Amino acid sequence: MTSFPSPLRYEVFVSDTAPVATPPRPDDGPSRWSTLSHTLIHGGTEALLTDPPITRTQADRLIEWVEGHDVALRYIFLTHAHFDHFVTTNHLLRHFPDATVVAGEAVLARIARETPGGEISERYQTFFGDALPEPPVTVHGAAFPAGGLKLDGHEVFVHEVGHSDTDDTTVLHVPSLDLVVAGDVVYNNTHQYLGEGRDGGLDAWHRALDKVAGLQPRFVVAGHKDARRGDPASDIDETRRYLDTAAAVLEQTDDRAGFFTVMKQRYPDRVNPWAIWLSALRLFEN
Image 1 (cartoon, rainbow, N blue to C red):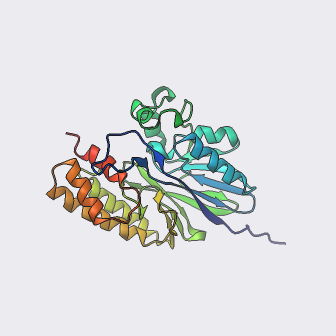
Image 2: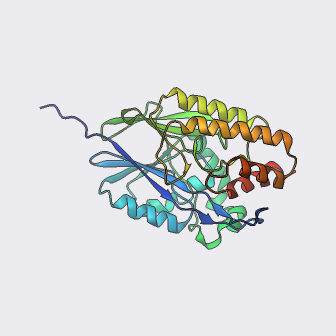
Image 3: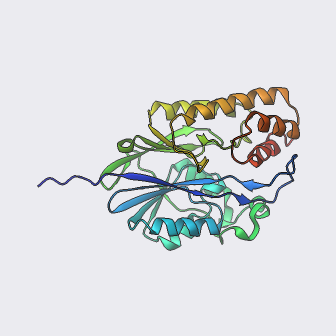
């Protein structure tokens, strides 16, 4: 008798915003880190989880949610090397010791450079204090196989897309689900981090979006999303429009407060205006 693999499903757990200690926003609004999306792709017996969160409390809630699915967590996949997408990986591994961390080679190399000695940088200690996991936080993973991997008999691929909101970004493609887990290449009704967007960064981000669109997904999970919304592929174009607006505002503005005010006015309904301020702090740091 021929056996067929069980169908895959995907589900998204969204970690809520977390308080951050930074210079106050120009409008005196709250300073909170954006929501974080964690995608669980699973069949009948095994699963893959993407991008662990930033605080211990977020990680513990995610662990409880994953355990509720009663499937073996085989892989933890990291889309890119921003701190908020990997720092609790080792915390998760203590609960899922049989899971293998997989990522692009450039992603793993950047994580190693940014966590010398396994320590957390002073910047993030200032931001989050005791909410962070215990060191070491350097991730020791395996390069994602160039030919993809199998999850309950289904093919899963990684695609390198270059610069998005940082360098060396990758996305996960699951053809059987018409799904792309896009990390921070795509945002879902959430203010985008643009701090690394100068010197051609915004144009490079457009090219990354072209690569995601070329996969022709039906569903796109954004790394930072509005928990009230689904995962439509239309977020690719919404992300593009935000980049175009920001590029125009940068041409007309020469200070942090001005950039923050205009972007907030242009997108009053997007989640977490503090992310505009985080961008502005970096964009106008000189």
